[in-house]
Every structure is written in C-alpha cells, then in structure tokens.
Length: 134
Image 1 (cartoon, rainbow, N blue to C red):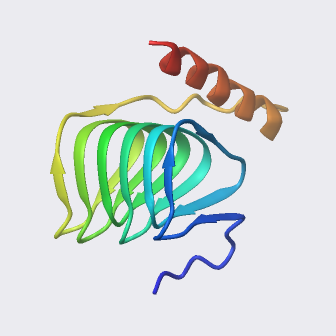
Image 2: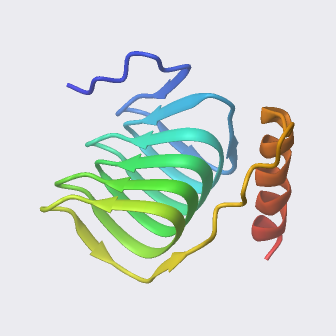
C-alpha cells in the first residue's frame, strides 16, 4: 500500500489514460498512462505503467516508465524501472532501481529577493510549453 496521504488526484490501477494530463498539486498514478504529463508533484506508484514525456517540479517513480522526464527533483525508488532520459536539478536513485538512459543535470534557477511562488510556477510552465512543442 502506498503512503500518499495528501493526494489531490489519483489514477487507479484499473484506469487507462491516453493523451495529455495537466494537473496542479499532487497526482498519484497507479494505472496506465500514455502521453504528456505536466504538473507539480507526481508519483508513479508500484503498479504504474507510463510512457511519454513528463515535465513536473518533483517526481517519484516506484513503477514502470518509458520516455523523457524533466523535473527539479527526481527520485527512483527500489523496484522502479525507467527507460529514457532524465533532465534534473536533483536526483536520487535507490539501490534496486532499474535505469537505462541518459541523465542531464540542469541548473536550478536561483530565487531572487522578493520573487513570489507564482513567478517560479510561470517559469516552469513556460519551459514546459517549449519542451512539449518539440
């Protein structure tokens, strides 16, 4: 069982989604998804099978993913399988995680004095729009 107590959205293990997912807050995927995923905090649960392009602020992978990930913080838990490239500011790969791909470190933009959370959000999403357009 997954300890995902503050979830705002859950895609259950018997659900299949094809297409773009755009979310705010936290999202837990236990089912199958194929396509672009854009948002804040994403967890791919142990039963997740996801492929596509993921651009989020933070991601934890416990299940299976194939594709491209861009995230400030990436965590690959033991038992996860990731095939594809990862662009990140911080990454953690636990012993027992399976990863086959390229890891590219991206600089976290320094926060300026007086910069609000919403300004940071807008920079993430403008970066997202450019990456999805490729």
